[in-house]
Each structure stands twice: as structure tokens, then as C-alpha cells.
Image 1 (cartoon, rainbow, N blue to C red):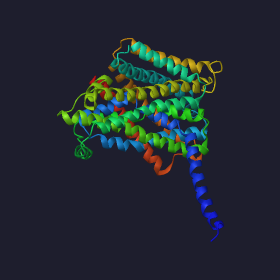
Image 2: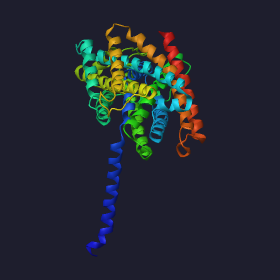
Image 3: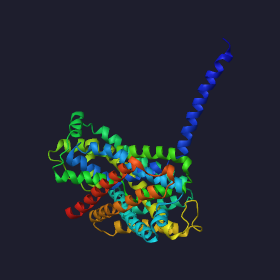
Image 4: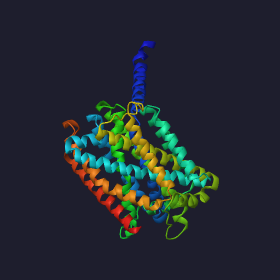
Length: 427
């Protein structure tokens, strides 16, 4: 047998390897918007919700976190479908298909929600700073300066990579989960237990569901795929990007829930009530080693807060631009798109000002929760309607899948509104 007899085999193997490498490189080039928005979804407020769930109810809400993975993917997949196929942002499509008045209503309330979210993220960063003896003005001021300099780089790709880099610090909660040594038998028992007759349990179920899709997530990802220049030929890889992000964000939520369940609920009968970032840190770090626990916890919260701050401030600037018509690409400098950068900076300044004003941040967080809950039916309603009206036939939402989407979004909206109103009355 000559050496030539091996040529087809070796050539075929080389072709397979080249194809796999090309597919990986294509994915790496397109990935970003989905991963960034999902990392932002697991912000300080979401982590507090997961910590509260584990501290009060152990592992009984763990199954809900798993179920939410396909749900959050389902919603965000519609945003990338709209973005890559139409090449327009969410506000633009609402204006085109439902009128300028509805577009102004959705974007105006979105900007208010973004400003409220910035307050939550800045309060998380300020809380971590105080843990290390850093004054609130210094920590929030440094973060604001960092965020302003970041967008002035003039590149969406660079901003995206920075957001992914800081957001991946959230993965430290996977470390805290394993360090907390959860009892496998308790985990399995929790997965089988659903105390639905308890109103407090139902409230946390609603809070977890209501927090999994924020209104600004939809606006951000659709604008991001447009700003990045993705088209319909990138739809498959964009879906993979979103699927990977959906798994990662829920793994982080699961990690926080398991950590507090193993360190607090398992050791105190009746559970523990947690409400702030500082309380969570003080509660879990002694069980993980004081220094190591504080460092890991701080990295995770700061990473979560930073990536969320990047996303919500950009969402506000993009959203307003879609309605007013000003230039709104990170590829444009300050001279070419002054209003884009003005809106971005104003949202950051509002967030820092509220945190430094001495306002009751718990009340502010409740207000933001209620606002997001009330916005969710409007935003998800427009999202599904646009998926049926704004897309050409091959990409349109239709058939049995459309029925499933309407059913799931209806349940999410109902539970989100319940969560917000219940939180308001409980305050």
C-alpha cells in the first residue's frame, strides 16, 4: 500500500478539523450581544433575589432556576431575530408598526427604568466599597469615570469585550457554591418540594420569574446586534451566543441560591431574611473563610453590577436615539453623535446622584422592581406582536410555537406584575 492511499483519509480529517475551527472562529467573531445581556441580567438585584430564595427556602426554588433557562432564551431569541432580519432597533420597529406615540411611551419609560437600574448597580458597587472602607463617592465616582472612558474608545467590539471580561467575574459564585459544600440529600429533597400553599414562597417564585427578563434586555440586545452589524446570515451563531448566555446567567443564579442555602438555611431552622448586599456578604463569608469569601463575593458583585451598568446606560442612549433620530453608534465619536454620549452620561450621573443623596435605597429598589414589572407586559407584548408582523414569512413567529410563546409570556407578565405589586405592599 503506497503513501498515496492515505491521502484521502488524511485530507478528509484535515478538512473536518478546518471546518470545526472555522465554525468556532465564526462563533467567536459573532458572539457578544447575547452573552453580555445575560451577564447583565444577573445584576446585584437578581443576586439578592437568588440569595433570599436560598436563605429562606433552601433548595425548593432550585428547579425554577433550571426551568427559566429555556424561557429567557425564548424571549431573547425573538430580539435577535428582529434585529438581524430587519436591521432596526426595538423602538424603531414599534414606531414603524404601531405609531410614534406608542414608541415614545415605550422608550420614555425604558429610560426611567434604565436610570432606576443604574441606581441599583451603583448601590451594589457602593456597598462593596464600604465593605473595604472605600467611601461611596470614591467607588461610584471611579466606576462612572471608567464607564465614560470605556465608551469613548469609539468601538462597540471593545466595549463588548470589556463587558464580557468584567461580567465573567460573576462566575466566582460557582466557586463559593462548591466551597459551601451543599448536602446532596438536602438538594434532592428540595428539588421535590413545592410549598405552593405558602404565599411567601409564591412571592419569591414570582420574583425570580419576574426578574429573569428585564425590559432593557430586549432593547439592548436588538440594538447591539444592529450596532455590531450582524445580519440574517449570522442568526444561527447569534442564537448559540444567546443560548450560552442563558445557561451561564442561570448557573450564576443557581450558584448564589445554593451558596446561601448551604451556609444559612441548612444551619438555621426557619430560614434567614436577607435584604442587602452587605448582609449577604456578612452572612456567607464566615462559612467560606473570611478573607477569601469577601474577595470572591466582592469580585462577583462588582462584575455583575458593572456589566449591568454598561448595558442599561447604553440601552437608554440607543433607545432615545431610535425615536429622536440622533446618531447612536459607538463607532461615532462625540462630535458625530453628541446626544448619544450626553444621554449615556446623564443616566450614569442620575444613578450616582441618587446613591449619594442619602435616599433610602431599599425603597428605590422596590420602585424599580414595580416599574420593571409594569413595563414587562408592554415590552413583551410588543416583542411578540413585532415577531408576527415585522418579520418576513421565513422568520415570522407562527404556528404552535407562537401559541407557546404567547402562553409563556402571559404567565411571566402576570407573575412579574404580581411580584412588583406584592413587593410594594410588603414595604
